[in-house]
Length: 177
Image 1 (tube, rainbow, N blue to C red):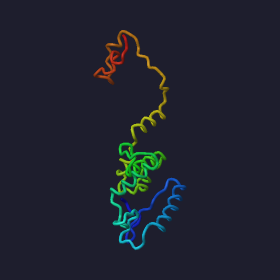
Image 2 (cartoon, helix red, strand yellow):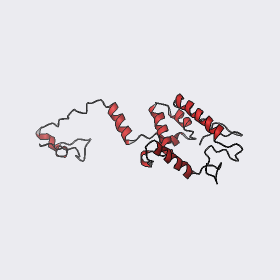
Image 3 (cartoon, rainbow, N blue to C red):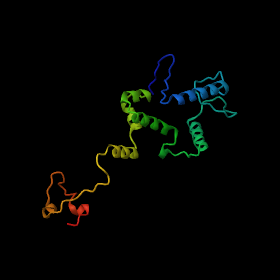
Image 4 (cartoon, rainbow, N blue to C red):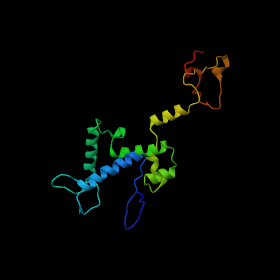
C-alpha cells in the first residue's frame, strides 16, 4: 500500500466519496475510540478482540472476516465471495465506483493507495453485466431491428475478405435460400 506520509508517522489518508458517510464514520469512530478501544495498547491496530482472554489484542484476519460475515447476516445478507460480499469485495466495488464516476486513472491510483497505476486494473475491471450495460447504453441501433439477408442466387457463393472461412454463410444464419 502506498503511504501518504513517511517517517516517523506512517499512515494513509482515507478518501471519502460521500460526505455524509464520512461524518457518520467520524461520529461512530469517536464513540469506539472513547468508549471501547482501551488506552495503552502495545500496537497501533484499530480492530481488537473483545474476548476475555484476548482483550485488546489485534484481530486476526479470520476474526475480521468472521465479524464482517456476522455484520452481513445482521442486515439479511449472506457472505458470498463470488458476489463480492466479503471485505475484499468492497475494495473492488470502491475501484469500480471510482471508474463509474469518471475519475482519471492517476486519481484512482492515489485513492486506492496503489504504488503502481497497473495495480488498480484488477479492481477497476468491469463485470460482465457492467460491460453489457455500457454496450447497451452506447448502442446506436434499436435492438428490435431485424437485419435482412439479401435473397439472390449469387449470395450462397460469396467470397468476402472479411469471412474467409465462410462462417457467416446464409445457411449458418438460418436463411432458407
